[in-house]
Amino acid sequence: MENTTVKNDLVLDVHESPKKKSQWVLLSLQHILAMFVACITVPLIIGTSIPATIISAGVGTLIYILFTQKKSPVVLSSSFAYLSSMGVAFALDANPLDGATGNYLALALGMIIVGLIYVVVALVVKKAGTGWLFKLLPTIVVGPVIMVIGLGLAGSAINNLTGVNTGADNYNLLYILCGLVALFVTAITAHYGKKTLSLIPFVIGMSAGYLTALIITLIGYYAIGSEYAKIIDFSPIINNFKDIGVSSFIGYDCFGFLEWNNGTFEWGQMITIVLAFAPVSLVTICEHIGDHLNLGGVIHKDLLKDPGLDRTLMGDGIATAVSGVLCGCANTTYGENVAVVGVTKVASVSVIITACIATILLGFFTPLMVIVQTIPACVTGGVSLVLYGFIASSGVKMLINEKVDFTKSRNIFIAAAILVAGIGGLSISFKIAGQAVTITSTAVAMILGIVLNIVLKEKKEEKAEDTATEEVAE
Image (cartoon, rainbow, N blue to C red; front, side):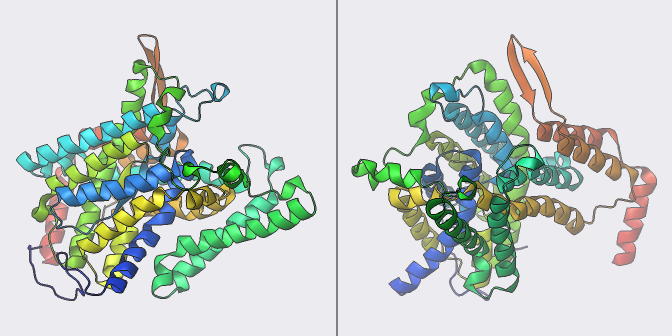
């Protein structure tokens, strides 16, 4: 794909801005709505700071825009791919009895590691190109690993939906009802919705689930007094306005680094943190490349050449590292916002900059943040059934799009080992110098895939058949 400045079918090109302020505001609002629910769902699941994550998304996107010289209309926000990694780091020796909400320092270090890996890969890409990366991580490895990331989170979605961790006898049917309302409304809106509605199905779905939970809580718990019907916990709102002060309206103290000393962190845990984050970062780098190829097709520009993959990776990686310091969540390019650009034909970077500034201000607006914190787990669990499925399905889609041939035994062996090891939970734990080290199942699955891909060379006759097929096709 050649780099071009031809405007083609775009209403506003990358370097252009809306002429009317009202139009500028609405276009920016669309980007905020497109990323908002997915952005807050990650910290809702992990239990990290929602305001810090929202602010980090805005700050991270501005950093990305700076590194890409305002040539790429990308929005960065919290990544679902790192849910397991963040969960491992956040739970490292956090002691609730000591008042710890989680190990924010371990979480921050994990995302700084991701940022460093992105920077290193960006520098290598600048010098050596991208061929080595695709050889290390071909589609037959990346596709199944993405499937493992999505399906490995299935248990978390079900636990949130049902309101219990184990035991079918303890299921709260009202929890399940609220979650299923959110699920079905999201699916129906995405499938049948027109224009703006089709861009914000998760907003509509979670709103419907929340409204259902609100009605059940008000009638069942507050009017009748049934604990079984207490779906929504309003304590975040009550506590926020109990002793009214500046922080009740402006969340200047929302950043997790204020709680770095709450978790029991030891440097020996760094090996576990590295092994939790590093393998996933290689997968998300491949996703990063795919998203930029997709967006490049939408705006008729080769973003891997201009501003260049080295710049896009650098911006994405440093944004994630900064998010770690602010104790938000790991960032990634958002397909939802690529869809907004594709549907509206508005690729204006100035619109995205405005959306970023508004997002940062929104993160500091405490009244909205405490309302968001009352969203019950069952509602996020309901939409997570779709979100996690989307992650897994994108792995399948990648295999189909790249026409991976599963009549070849090597491909079956590689995919099978990755899927069973990852979904089956093959994690490896051991000690180094007295410190417990855990290699997560996702990391083990990816390592197995890489090694098998190297060991199982393609047979000469298979290569010859592929060449013959390509010649016939031509």
